[in-house]
Length: 555
Image (cartoon, rainbow, N blue to C red; front, side, top):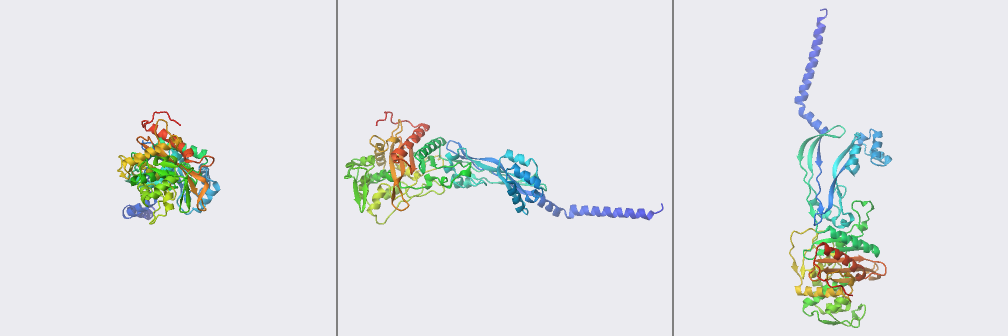
């Protein structure tokens, strides 16, 4: 061989190169192994949440009122998607996004690694987009709330925001109960951000707990239908209706107008958000007269046959003149309720100890929260004075100078319906009858119920509240609304009816309030009483309550 040293030199170079490679392999796989794995994991391994299913909201019979449906939220890495404007334009078109605005946003966020493309997308639509495998476009599984009964139950159930967190109603009040606990897992992603492999489950997702409300969806539909119809018919500003189980204190129906569809909040108005039955107050007017009568009977100074001279149809208290619709002359206690005499209850109230009427109202639940637990519930206003001005005492006796919510009014009439027992109001289904507090003797409650029956009979102000085959006890109210300038408007009213059935053994209490009905009819007996009748008729039928009056209705 002519140049043996060259071959030796070549072998030497190959040997050195191989040694370097072997040394490098050993170095990377032994010395630098942990460092390189950490660096690889930092770029390719991610800890991601596993969304938890939110608990359902159900009515007392198990009908769903709020459920969670799976959706996909699409997102992008602006640094990756921004490199290919052709694909970016296709993404905008596929999602129905304005192209120019989308591209401007992409440029604005070019230094970021995350931007939402579209939230809560239908899984089929999302799969169509992700199937294009555009670089930088990804999807994450989430849940979106759906409300099967829509506006019928919306004020009670409430709604969630886009992150599935309660914002109103029971969704907000029971957020911690309904919200589940998200899980966690470790995944491997490719350089474009797509998940290619699940590596480790760190913790399972735990779904939220279901919430059973006290309402009966069948009765809720009836109440909503009738309330909406009367508000539209009389062009009223708003309205509320509440149906209460007199035996348990559970709310079986609670509706308001105006309402909104929680599944489509694009057209939602702020005015329609309030659950007026629990948050709005009004002066209850003549519906307070039975409570004043109860105070008089409990004082021992009066009995149902006691007579009060209401002549000449008005009475002066200080500088204020309190009037009846006409001169009713001498009325017994029952007649004061039947004719809704302001003069009669004024004379009764002024003859009692100063705090008697106020203490009776308070014992019935006025001026305090009902313990429903609903967010934003109003306590109403029940004044208390060290020294009572006679005019304050007189006006309180017939329902002015105080304010109540519709639910408070229903609870107060529930005391009569349960023969003197006050039960806490519940929006949740009760497994057992809650403990009640006696605030009135049973015989007094029955006496007042008998008086309230005359209101719906011939000659009373609430004949339109009658329910076929059932005896009804209740009270009308036609309330002047306060004016912005002080005092009361002469032509702005709230029409009210509060009552119970069957009167022989009350099962249900219903309160209907129509705010500012416009037109010729505005009295409680004309506007609110017929709604009470229709709601109560259907509700008693749904509960299979036995009739207590099979005689044909007269008058």
